[in-house]
Length: 141
Image 1 (tube, one colour):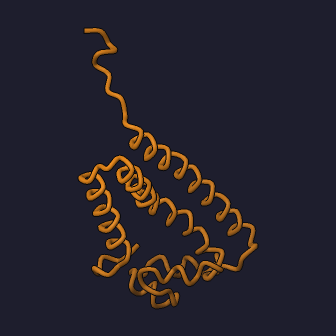
Image 2 (image 1 turned 30 degrees about the horizontal axis):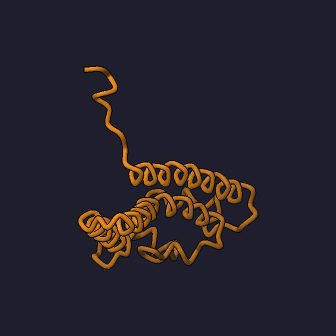
């Protein structure tokens, strides 16, 4: 056998999914860098001033959320106008990339009339969305 006979080629759907993850990851990293620069330059006032951050280090997560007046789960989203929470956008974007990738796969599998993979991709989106929602008491973030 030659080397070419043992090669496996990725399907167009796999390439699309990989490209979404690749470009999306770099986009998410760029977004985190931009929002971090906004934070450190002080363009947006932080929810917790930098000099007060050490006061929260020894606290449990529950105590921190209470003392800092931050909502549970997706409560951070209400604080996106604050410099120290704006950088969560990049992290959330990276977290949603898999769902975006699967949504693209769903349309591709529907076009191919591949019912089994369509169902698997739809179920994957539903499971990931439900897990991220916090409805199951898993934290939602």
